[in-house]
Length: 111
Image 1 (cartoon, helix red, strand yellow):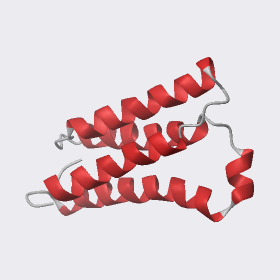
Image 2: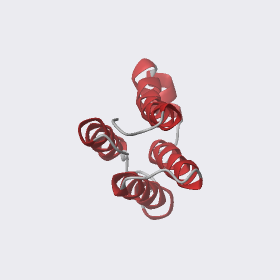
Image 3: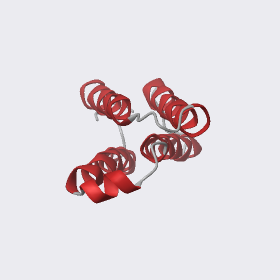
Image 4: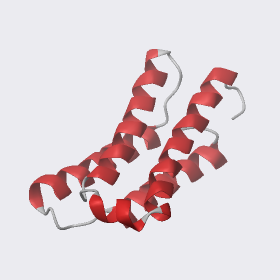
């Protein structure tokens, strides 16, 4: 995260940590995974990414397009699971989007 302030780097690491936490909770407890609606996981990821992007943008920090695209994809998954097909799970797709955002952020130094 070269060229970034300590505060900016902390926000990005916090964002990544929250994204990982979403999936860690699902992994730890099968009863939680079974009890939550299908749209909640992508929505939680979308809120995390988009909130981080808005916060960083408000502080005039650069926000990678990957953050916005990932957040919007997760929001789209949540909308499809809520409105179109409530039985459709987007856990795998949400995990892939999350991994891509974190990997690009790690190797490119931005999210």
